[in-house]
Amino acid sequence: MPELPEVETVVRGLRPILIGRRLMRVELHREGLRRPFPDGLVQRLTGAVVTGVDRRAKFGLIATNHDDTLVFHLGMSGRMRLDPPDVDGQNRGKHDHVVFTLDDGHVVAFNDARRFGSLDIVPTAALATYAPLSLLGPEPLGPDLTPAYLQTKFAGRAAPVKPLLLDQRIIAGIGNIYACEALHIAGIDPRRAAGSVSAAKLAKLVPAIR
Image (cartoon, rainbow, N blue to C red; front, side, top):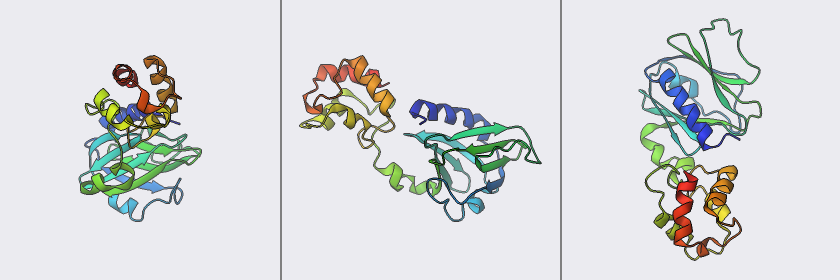
């Protein structure tokens, strides 16, 4: 499964390709992935100009001048692939489930062999209340993740520290591999009760997460 750093890499790669480009054509090659595609997806995106490409946790966010944001999740095997101008579609892959043609002729394909990814479209003004994003904790790389914050969240908790690091309501976007590595670097037993982790260890854990 793509972890947060991989999603960040995808977003950074898409940003210079998409921003300022118009989506001339949007093709859906199936009815959905993990969930059905939302009604009106093609209509709301076709003709829109991309104004921003960002990330929240493991979700990619593609904003348009239609005041909508395309929210994508790569799931287990998803990826965004850039193809050169290809009018006849001869470069299409078997698992290219959503294909975007840009006004410069380039094509961006959402390819997902296992189909655990997702695409949704949300009014940009409603992103803060969009269910998958609204309950997320602070970003691992953001200023709100501090030792004091973790101390508050872990206080009195008898649960092992590792599952709490994986709780997206506490920290957004940390997966199993990175939780294990961060705890190892900080010298914290993943089975230890979260509420018993010392302030000194938490001070080591935050930079280890980053």
